[in-house]
Length: 503
Ligand code: N01
Image (tube, rainbow, N blue to C red):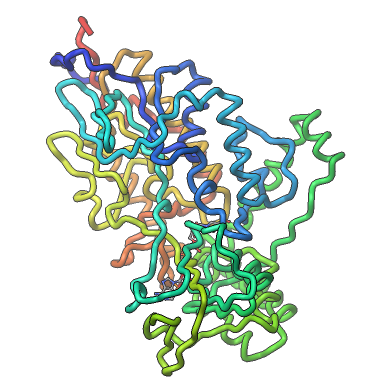
């Protein structure tokens, strides 16, 4: 639907770029590549750090790796024949991102050290003003918010946390100069990051105490190296890489039947996990402590073959007493024991903004997105929100997979966003704004479908708000998500405003 032309007021000759991308992590870099491939050259990436990479730049703790196979945890438009293993470590993934930046000549388009402090829609001009700390604002027709939901390390709200006099470290902010050799270390958190870092600490430290609040469902992760011959074959025959990606994709789609929906197949996943635990953990007391009391998939599945063996090493202790407080010397548990440490490692996840976006966003008529999302975020097909024209999210509301690669979802979002950007340019539109009815219908359907999923089956996780609203996950197969993004209808579901003739 196209609305009436809008006469724009003067921007006083301030330069306006077509597109500003906030964040030079996986999503931002992917969006930049696809914009270039679609002929859009007038864009800028705004990155708060001094180098690209996002989560893979920040998460460098020992053992940091991806628990999704690299063939699927990469872009189909940037295949890499050289992955050294089935599941790659953090350094190799970061190097893949660096290679994409170099191959697509993106470095000169990234403004490093540019922390976006807010974006405000200038309705008269159909332009977004991006405020940047210690710098002039940047004006852009379109904004892509690619800053990621899990970028700020989250410390737990435990009394006395500031009192600890030893070394304090977060898994997402690792101090590589600190030597753990010979040290007594406490680790709080046994989620996806915790189970990766604990085996490495057990290898290097004198003693490791693992404070577990909730045990997770663990599945084995077998990670063979890729031979030089196979890599050569991948490089020579690109079809082989596509075939391997497709095989992983459909394999994960079948896993969805057990972990996305609370179904009889969920019991199969749980049985596999229990059998694997019985084979690895000899002590019945420890097995009981490690057995979850929620449906598999409700919290993220933990993919590791190193965690259970590490817990049983002589220098490792599993502590399941709840933490009462942190003291100057260590951690006191509720039964009154003080555990003393040289270092405390927090693998306690990230600050998930209640408002769903870490950047204040002001749209049409002074609407503030954080206020509108205060009871839980929502969007049209996870990328656009009515009243915030020409502004798009990657990894926005309800776009998280529980069984597949986030990159598959991201690629589908990016392609939809690039389609919107190129449509605005081709049809000489001022703005595209999603229709409130299309947005409401979509979200009603999403929330109805979420009721039948494992995520809403009763456990606590970062997927849910305090009130239990699920603004994080997509209730379906990855193939359904990709299909819905390809099917976005800009004519029917969006309102378009054409530029005035003299613009
Ligand atoms: O963080 P988490 P994470 N007292 O929030 C515990 C991605 N990721 O960094 O379960 C005691 O999952 C908390 O306990 P509980 C992935 O999307 C991906 O591990 O709340 N314990 C839990 O054990 C993942 O979902 C990869 O009871 C406290 C842990 O800290 C996301 O990042 C690898 C506590 C936090 O677990 C976050 O994972 C790693 C307290 N007060 C991460 N507060 C890949 O391989 C918290 N905890 C792709």
